[in-house]
Amino acid sequence: MTTLEQAIGHSQHHSPVSRIVNSQIFWVFAAAVLACIALSLLTDSFATQRNLFNVTRNFAFVGLIAIGMTTVIASGGIDLSVGSSVVLAAMVISVLMSAGHPFWISAIVALAAAAAVGFTNGILIAYVGMPAFVVTLGMLSAARSLAMVLSNNKMIWEFGPDHDLLLWIGGGSTLGLPHPIYALALLTIVMSVVYRWTRWGQYVFAIGGNEHAATLTGIPVKRIKVSIYMFSALTAGVAGILMAGWLGSVTTNLGQAMELTVIAAAVIGGANLAGGQGTALGAVIGALLIEVIRNSLILLGISTFWQGMFIGCFIIIAVAFDRIRNLGSQD
Amino acid sequence: MSRLSLRGISKSFGAIQALSDVSLDIAPGEVLGLMGDNGAGKSTLVKIVAGNFRPSQGAMSIDGDQVDFHKPLDAQRGGVEVVYQDLALCDNLTAASNVFLGREPRRSLAGIPILDYATMHRRSAELFASLKSETRPRDLVKRMSGGQRQAVAIARTLLSNAKIVLMDEPTAAISVRQVAEVLDLIHRLSDQGISVVLISHRMPDVFAVCSRIAVLRRGKLVCSKPANDSSPEEVTGLITGAIEMA
Ligand SMILES: Nc1ncnc2c1ncn2[C@@H]1O[C@H](COP(=O)(O)OP(=O)(O)OP(=O)(O)O)[C@@H](O)[C@H]1O
Ligand SMILES: [Mg+2]
Image 1 (cartoon, chains in turn green, yellow):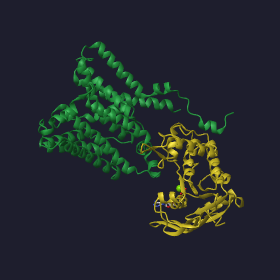
Image 2: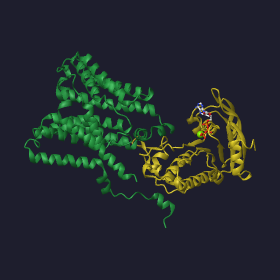
Image 3: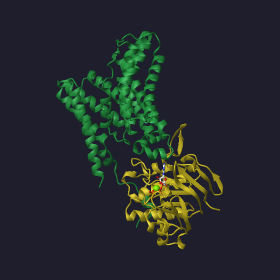
């Protein structure tokens, strides 16, 4: 006979192996690795240093924002305005730098602009009580329009005295790895720790799990929601600055339709659109899979018009998997 | 001294007089069964004690100290905890995380405050043991039985050293076996000197667990007496109005 204390102290019977095999991240990662192997065998161009460099850098931009998006989704929300925060931040920094301002000051103002977008989203959602979908859809239109007004809808490719610094930060590499990858690695580690080990992280998931319960326990739900949308917009702002440096020029269609790719990466990586679930690593691996697929379509000579079809199917399949798993655990 | 003392509590919502001149005392460790027909004012009374509403008139004291709650957090600080009907748990978090939600202990790692999971797991295990419930701190609440979920909700109230626990129809929508578990948990609270106010429409539950019975009819208190001196028949009569007052 077991005593009560033993029964309480008992942990669930899940070996580390079964935990890994049961996780969505594992299977998405396996799919990405398989796709890489297949592409290396099928094409001469995939495993070249130049192509791999491009793949890693491209996926870093999506991955950065996908971590912000995962936070929003885990809290039970959605942020459709990230693509517009990207172009707004990129436009603010390039307008300021081309007017002769130094990089650091311009970057801080650009991030402040992105944060203001997130702040507005958060206030309207948390305090006014409007649906996140509607607020961020409106912001998607408004923030991009603001970027057009700022730049007079012209392309900017002259970044003043710190021109080379911006290009180096966004497009350069250190020890063979493109700089955006360092930003992504840092954010992944920091946010993994924050999710698990801080009150803020705990509250993000509590709000996504049961917002009413979170409110009753005295968690400052509204303030936390505002901070979540600000964080999401800031990840988009950082990505926007890095993209400006990578491309060496900024136009007003930068980041267009990026919200779909980012949401797809988060969902494929295990973020639950119903709220309460998601990991930083999952978002990154989801972004990796999408970029590998996108790259493979190009290398295999398949029309890029098919990209949207693949991403769309991936979102639906990822959500379907989630459904099936939930059915399996309910009985 | 009474744990909770209500003096002349009245509450009106516009033209509706939900409570009129209710005076009631509950001793430490006492389990009060609050009964009455639909709309009698039971939930309103409990919400006043929990700080959701302020009374239109009347005074309230806990352990002899006059209290005036403006919001639920005030009541919580005053030692009043509520177990909500839907339990208000986060399914996606562990039992321990739910017990400590909103008041997580932290420790410092190189000056950065991080969650102290070791303490959370140990303390919740102690609380579940004191409730004699086989609930594992690390399990996700979504995989738990109804009885275990109740234990998590009740462990929350123990954590804060509550003096009074309010339960509004905790047994309304659960199975017979789970009802027995909840009644057991109520006994454990009472053993620890905590006073419990239980709202229920189920006569057998009330008589199984309550030491005192109070009946509200159309906002007026028509009975407050030890359960031993009453009977289901009398209480039914008081609820319907067949018996005017007892
Ligand atoms: N927020 C409110 N605004 C206006 N009227 C209210 C409000 N809350 C309760 N009432 C009214 O006060 C009266 C008492 O309601 P209360 O919810 O306390 O009844 P109850 O005894 O809990 O009933 P039940 O058994 O159905 O839960 C009812 O007439 C109700 O319509
Ligand atoms: Mg009621």
